[in-house]
Image (cartoon, rainbow over all chains, first blue to last red; front, side):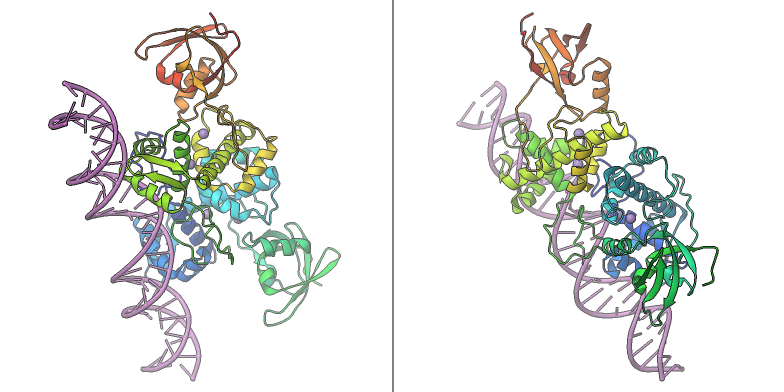
Amino acid sequence: MSARATDERSGAHSTHRAVPREKALTRQAEDYLKVIYEIEQGGSPAATTDIAEQLGIAAASVSGMLQRLARLGLVKVERYRGARLSASGRLIALQLIRRHRIIESFLVTKLGYGWDDVHEEAERLEHAASADLVDRMADALGNPTADPHGAPIPTVAGRVDERRLASIADLPVGARARVVRMSDRDPELLRYLKKRGIVPGAILRLVEREPFDGPISLTVGRAKQSIGATAAAAVYVEKSARTDR
Amino acid sequence: MSARATDERSGAHSTHRAVPREKALTRQAEDYLKVIYEIEQGGSPAATTDIAEQLGIAAASVSGMLQRLARLGLVKVERYRGARLSASGRLIALQLIRRHRIIESFLVTKLGYGWDDVHEEAERLEHAASADLVDRMADALGNPTADPHGAPIPTVAGRVDERRLASIADLPVGARARVVRMSDRDPELLRYLKKRGIVPGAILRLVEREPFDGPISLTVGRAKQSIGATAAAAVYVEKSARTDR
DNA sequence: ACAATAAGTTAGTACGCACTAACTTATTTC
DNA sequence: GAAATAAGTTAGTGCGTACTAACTTATTGT
Ligand SMILES: [Mn+2]
Ligand SMILES: [Mn+2]
Ligand SMILES: [Mn+2]
Ligand SMILES: [Mn+2]
């Protein structure tokens, strides 16, 4: 009874619930935790501006939210220095990421979505889907360990393969590599890459690289391609055995 | 760019969008429209208190929201007299109901949910699922015309079978009837009824009715049952040919 | 070392959406 | 038809989340 302001996954409807309940986070708070997690993967604390940019909001808004998240014990903030997730904040982030990736997998495998076009839908559903629903989806998929973009799916307990991958942009000339993962953000970019055969699993060899973020030439199977630095940075690879030319 | 406060289905993320876009309603606004629609099915405008009760919020909150919805042209409010949906408000309500019912159907048919246990999940997902996703779900189900509780599914254009059904509570003694639909709100109640064989499609006959909202005796197949007035009001029926005893 | 620039914070504002308390209008009952 | 009750509205408040503008702190380049 008596729904408290702006609750997301708590089902304000006639669902009377005697027990206090953990008080669900809002969609926004969850998304903050997720981008902080992702930025932190880069090694350093998440800077205000980076969070703001990822979320498409003003830096000032982030300062405010970080204080709230700190008050909730979900992040540790050092003023002028950025935010780090606490253990509980990290768990929430990883569970959200789990929901996101399982949903993406489900949409692609069971409902015919293209993997280049699934991110935005998942970005909303991840906040509305219960853990139960997500587990059912995972079961229906045979509990996959990676999503359609090759990103690893965290377990319910929040365990995930966190090894850092090199992107094409990091590859030395002559390297042979297998695409294991791609960014999922920009459908346009993903379609562009897909059309060129650059998809998870593809094997490629870096032929040449122009300086100053210039074009990168590579072979994908038979074909020769040339892509820009931004596109190259969105494709994560694992070097294959033969590293010479 | 520049996400406006508290947007629900609009995807505030890095999704740059040049066109202004229809500015999505919030979860709350959508749910208001839905309950107004449902109350209006009773024939009269939706009273403030009825809306408040359905949503589990205070009447004062409803007064405020009704003004906002009126400002948006989604309802027509007569002070002290209740609210009616405008044409555009009704369309939004029906599209939401469509999403809700298709989602419920999908969860039951494709993910093994019980029809007694699916409402709350749908209550959240209906606001996050795009029309595209819902259409894909509907396709995967063969475009059903009713949900697991027997409720008709509106078309994309907002057409729906709106005939009023009698509930068991309305049946005269001796009547034979087929269950075509049940309320979806209370899982407990639904489980109770299911255990007694009272499910969509069941044929029953009203044997006896005690006055003052007393117990209602009926036969369900072979078995004899006796249920209370509240339970009886949650089961909608269609009288069968033979109406005598 | 210090000025210029970038990054971050605070203050003030706004809106959505809830609440309670107090008041007003409508309906019901004697 | 006036009093009692129910229904509905307004006023004032609080929280979440965004904004812009103005200020402060950190970093960098000379
Ligand atoms: Mn994604
Ligand atoms: Mn999201
Ligand atoms: Mn339902
Ligand atoms: Mn809902």
